[in-house]
Length: 292
Image (cartoon, rainbow, N blue to C red; front, side):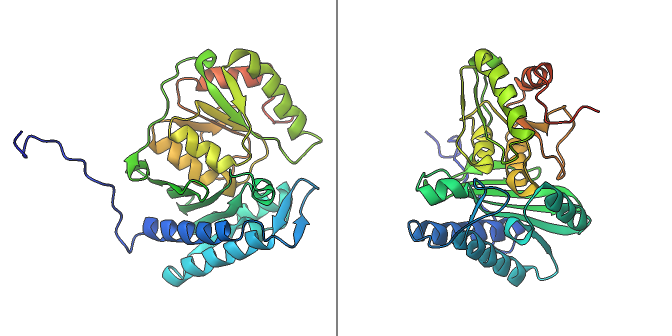
């Protein structure tokens, strides 16, 4: 076959000075360090509840990421989970204060800390960059599998340099979904359980892996048909939302409004099952929005 006729695979490459390259470098270095610290956690603290864990590894990884970002972009702002007081209200206030920044990095150093502490290998580093409130770069790194999910606004999404595409399931009955179990046991958890109870009979099955960012990366890569969860924060969702959008999927809140950084009740799917998932949550009164 003539070499000119042969369709060559062109690898996905980012330039060394780009925002994306810095995000990749931060995620890879932090992820490598996090993995090296498995089993060494000595100090275990809680935030909003006994289930909401934070370790010195979370804090150390965030400091590492902050230093690396500010070395390249000293004028940029950073919103990181470990730099914000615990609780939904503090998270919303921190985002409100930061979202007008021209360039805002949104960082979760370990998304899935409980898994990490227990040695359950489903956790990730999530880094996003928003420009004037719109996410333009998203990176989710899974140190356990050495999988790096990357998205650039308008340029697609990739894992191991290969384009990611959402799954092709066209109905809930064919779908594998994921969810999580919110820390807020008074309202969000009962709401999420009502949604789970309504969806389980309609779908192939539901998984609860314990890392919102990785669940969303899996939707982008076609490994899950969809994902929903209530009471999330910007750093849980920002990178994953761009991964899904750039892979052909759809991300909204649980009432169907388009995704933005303030969305806390999330539905993320391949697009084809989106309305069915929204309708089921609505019928079950499980959207996470309080009725007046």
